Length: 338
Image (cartoon, rainbow, N blue to C red; front, side, top):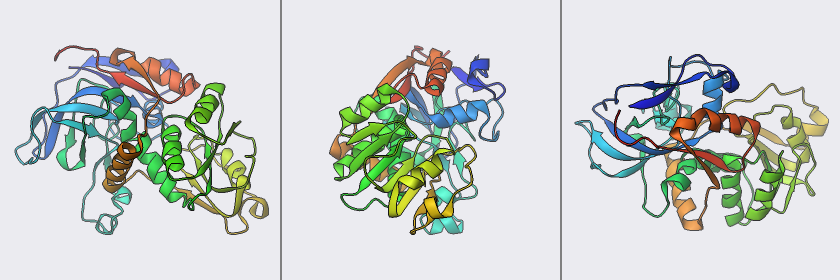
């Protein structure tokens, strides 16, 4: 099969990815073999490719927003059949026995593994996934539109929960890419007022089209104090900016897996009055199930920009440069195994 692999992590402009021939993976006893139809392009992929995240697997194939069809399965798998449509997401496996897993926080499992970081992901014709971590997908949403929901959507949903937005509250979103534009739709469906602070006129226009009350620059102050805010942009210098925008008792959740250094915080201006700063770490499978059900119920839709699988580096470069709103999605443009 054809697949992209990270030769040596580095700037995406320096071509760290190589298109290669790899054997079609063999599923383990508890795994599904999935023929990839689409794979969303996530900012975490960019962090893996460029080395912002530590190397977990040499020559890894990135990608963890996969929609595909089951083509084979291990002998221990039940409940799936060839041809089933499934989603493959970021969280690949946990130990299931640690204190975090036992209390329902499997996203904090010290032995957790991740698709496209610890194991080869969806920038390929085929990938594997433990059956217990796959998401059965309904037929109502096309593949391209479904892919970003599998990470951008799920992480945005967990970030919204972590932000403790009160009913009818005022939410600020810093950055408005693949995850934020889905999170905004969930918040709006729940009755929130959403203010978007982001670079790029296209992203600001999309925010207003989706129903945001305002859309300004990333360093602007929103038109009213915020009850909650979520930082999607991987820019640590925005942490104090967002904290200053919070009302008393407000919560800022940082949604990304990677963040540049945060400048010193002014306690009186940015943290006093019981403001809170929280991180977001991966997600649980329950987060994924809840979000996918909510997305179907409220008609949450991704704004997408398809790229052929063969143009994955172009999609990553465009993501880094902010050349599109919404999310990029790779479409498997290679017919049959190679």
